[in-house]
Amino acid sequence: MANIQRYFIELSYDGTNYHGWQVQPNAVTVQELLDKALTTLLRQPIETIGCGRTDTGVHAKEYYAHIDVKPIDHGPWTIDKRSLNALLPHAIAVKNIIPVHADAHARFDATLRSYAYHIHFEKDPFLHGYSWLLRDRPNLELMNRAAAIIMEYSDFSCFSKSNTQVKTNNCKIVKAEWAETENGIVFHISADRFLRNMVRAIVGTLIMVGRGEMQPEDIRNIIQSKSRSNAGISVPACGLYLTEVKYPYIAP
Image (cartoon, rainbow, N blue to C red; front, side):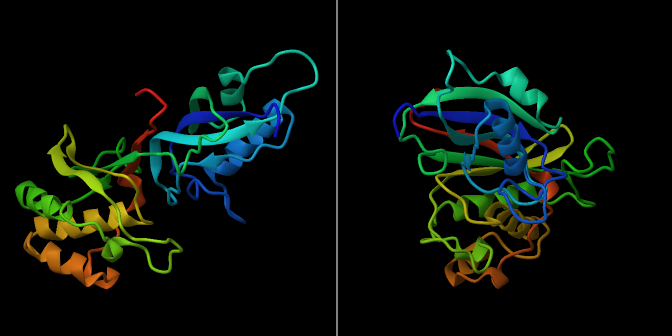
């Protein structure tokens, strides 16, 4: 359509009080609130296309969505970031508004996505809702050995939520490792794409290794089984953050 301008909206959000990114009936989502704010600001119906889904309670330090905007009838205009943020709740912050070419797509053009999962071991009111509290510290060395094995595979059906409508359960993981933090530990994982619930299921399985409930090599049998019932629990959403989304035409 002539004169339509496509933009990427870079944002971050605290997912505690939202039922994930994607619009759904009878639930408040990040996409719903962003669409309403953009529609109010631009005085035209706006529907965002996000870079992917995040589940209820999951946070995003970096998230991208794209929009198409029609020109207004009088004079030049721009999307003012400050005005847009004023229309959004404190838990959602627009960081950047980037003009892109007409075919740019927030979901399909992403070449890499990264997540971090945070765990702490001492009760802390300032981490509640933003990290998972564990009583006992797991063995980090064993979990990193198991994480390295995960990177040898591509079919992650065993870590996927059941009955999801995707063409393939294959993902290319390029990073999977645990590290110490000031308050506990964090799991970093990067891949070209992720399945629904995949990261939380991986973390739950690796925690079982760290607790000595299975050996690192047992991860092979779980992955090769392609059965979700053989993997570990899905850990709480509060500790999970989408931390980075990469595109070939947006500089880091």
